Image 1 (tube, rainbow, N blue to C red):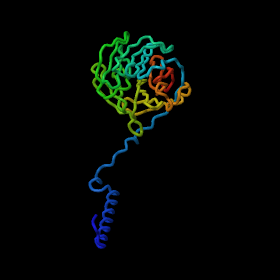
Image 2 (cartoon, rainbow, N blue to C red):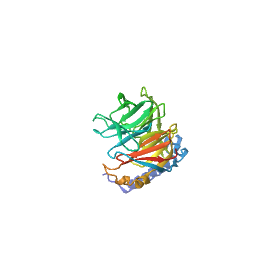
Image 3 (tube, one colour):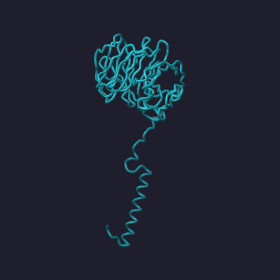
Image 4 (cartoon, rainbow, N blue to C red):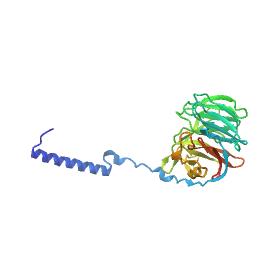
Length: 287
């Protein structure tokens, strides 16, 4: 440690005080070249807050409580479901009223089933981290081919009658050509505060994408042209009405997060369920 004489010490304190004052002035004015940089625009100020979407329970049906639901789809009177977990993942066709399994296809143990959608006469199914998707014939549920998924993970899947639309658990949604599986468009889901993450199971309803948000009981209504969240349905009270535990108290093998949205376009009906839920619920949102 250096030794200071009184004179040197006084000069040292004076210079230190001047330097501190210069730093304070620089911080107030932006300092150096930064004063010429443009201010960052607050784009969130231009995004309206999502509307609140109320829900009404229409019917409650049985659902397999051992199904770790990852994808849900309605077509011609049947529910098609993709379930997860290594060793138990399946593609299933069920009767929505009785919950009876009519046909099932087990995935190889190395695959973890994820999102599901039906486009034309084909079923498309994603897997979690295996960079693989499958295409099945709708009538027979026979696997026709596989395809490569570019992102590290794949979660929810839907379609807009032209493109496959999937998410990877972030705020991104990817639009794919259903024949080549090449990405043709990408949007970022966001609200007035910025990106919205954990976008999970997807369903295209009347021009919007409805999505479960993982680790919440929310259903997001997303504008596919901008990615903006147009509305939110908070279904926390649904668990209480169904006699299910609060999400914070859900056990590993008991009813977990809300996950699964299926739309009957002909009758304008929405069906929802969750991981290990004993119920398939028909609800009314803003459809």
